[in-house]
Image 1 (tube, rainbow over the protein chains, first blue to last red):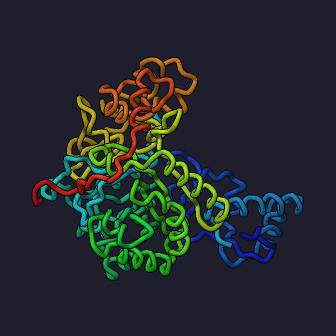
Image 2 (cartoon, chains in turn orange, red):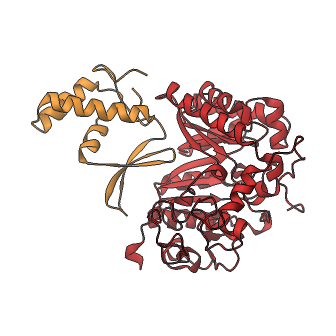
Image 3 (cartoon, one colour):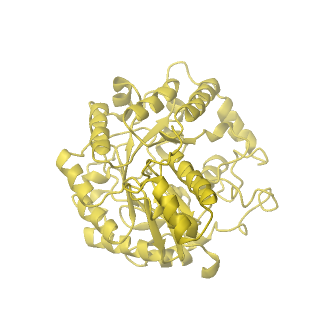
Length: 92
Length: 365
């Protein structure tokens, strides 16, 4: 499987969703037989994974929104998306 | 006490014990509950709402075959309304195209489909149902075409162990995003059929290696969850991730259990959804609290470094093999009863496997 490129349009496939759990007071990524805690950064990334925006656009947006170094953001986001894609929780 | 106990994350909803298949390793109890005793629709909806309120995230709509319930679409829709992640654990037999479309429209999140073997004739013989394999392939095709994630559930035993790798390849071919390759665990029906089901150690090791090799080959395409046979292990499995720690089970008649096999343990007091809420049963019922934590443990578990890793293994296996559910799971090499497990593991499989005792209701429900 290819690593996510700047032009890929990551999205959560059907059967994977981000949920704010009121009981535990945290964000969770729910997938078949899996629950992954999502920290604030992961939530910010995953909320932008709509299947329309490219990875490049998502990185640009995050770097702008959080006034952060683009290179660092790009590396973090690519790593997160790649990890979730390997677990089949994100489609590219 | 309540503040020390984490909320339940998963619920196995055994909607019915009725099933068209007769798999000889079925995880349902030997004493199957009859249709007449099943909870009605309104009660299941209340239980699902209580589950969501208590913190349950995943609901596994299971059985028996959950699709024999006439209200399966209504219950699935109720899961979606309550914000629960719904997983249909089905044999695929009894699932018509119309019913499938209705489940998708109701917001079903995931389908877990059992497949008995990579070869039709053998698969149908294992299931005790002619034509089952072909029907399952059809259901798999509908599922992937609808964009629903598909998990293939493959239980491994003597009749199919030589095709473990082919089961994985079949799942990939069917478009499954996940496969559970689970070597048979010997409780209930599987215990009755152990001589017919248990492969040799060599066969098992070959199968395990084959599946592990495929994990790398198909990384990013299919997630492989591999439940390796514990008779050959040194440490026991962390059964249920610990008693009353993550999941609960509601039986067709509404008994609330810490695991689907817990009813085999004598002397446990199970509460019913007819008298208690799910949260009350989770936090306060004797059956959930009896093996929670480490206080109940005997030695060697009580002082063991791994007591919070594997929680003493499986209570049902300890009971089945040693006669006392409080003992260490004899799979553990530290258990004083470990020789019992070793002896079973070393037994030569008979040259000709005995016939299966198929899982069937004793009398017509």
